[in-house]
Length: 112
Length: 112
Image (cartoon, rainbow over all chains, first blue to last red; front, side):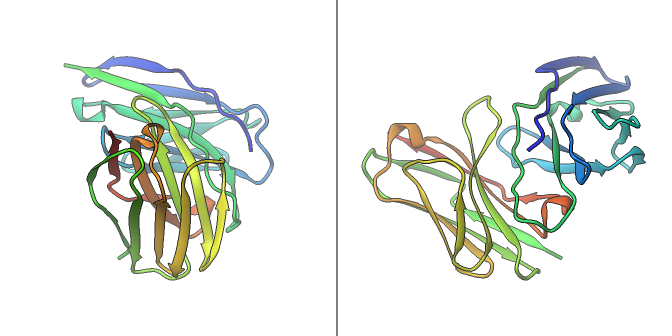
């Protein structure tokens, strides 16, 4: 499985844009990049998934360069409620049997 | 719509006692099912996953076991709990790793 590396923690202020970058140098051709958000004492929640270029939904944007060795989760205008741990994962793009492995994630702290 | 139920929410058990945590999924068929454990302030550790009834894959050797007696039921068990079994246990389901995971609300287990 492709290993991912992301910052342990980040700080921001309300209203700012937050970009969390994840490295996945040995990503495979069939791998997708997925980000999850986890609040304390809750299970992780799917945020966004992409394969290449840019993906945007109502919550975030995901930027993936052409070599796909990294990806950046962009959270526009964060609020206090965006304080959480964010996990970057790479996973096979099929209905296969492999299970996701979560790293330690990035702990985002949003200040007023 | 699909829902995932996990219970109990919290559990305090003495060392050496048995454990049974149950997870059920509604609104889908033949889901992939997963058990994860999260120690305080850490990432998620994959314990077991299942792609069908009676099919269990174990990721790490441990004091726990899993069973899938029905298509949408996943059970985590132990015959004798250890102090090191304490943690936050999460059940999840997916239709395949590329589709994203949906997590249950988790069980906080404290072994005393």
